Image (cartoon, rainbow, N blue to C red):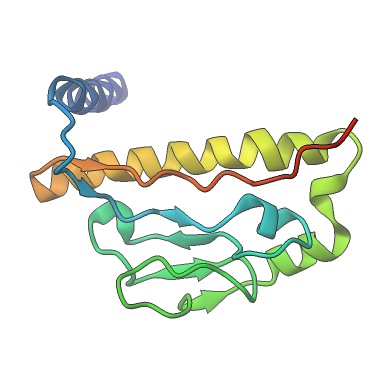
Length: 152
């Protein structure tokens, strides 16, 4: 029974992704509500901006109901929402420790892993929102960190 359930789940995910790949993306598609909003730099470094906020309801097409901020200055995700429902001091601690500037792991976390994870989570959330709402929704683009170019 376990193999059959796993195969059916895999078939369901493949069917969902194939359906969304076949549907043409248009400019009139509604933007999806982000499941992860905010910036990686503000979460892992003492940088200006808004720390990441997880919106657990966005994937179920119920944005803003259950949001958890990773810091005291977390981004709002739902419509008309000013602050997350619950705020944990993770980004404040990471910013105090300057985790984004660790010698080997810091730039990799801040520039590659965190934005990649944010794009993946928001893409999967947009897919489930499209399936639940019945119309195509495009994932919101993740904010890229803006860094000044160094002078020679």
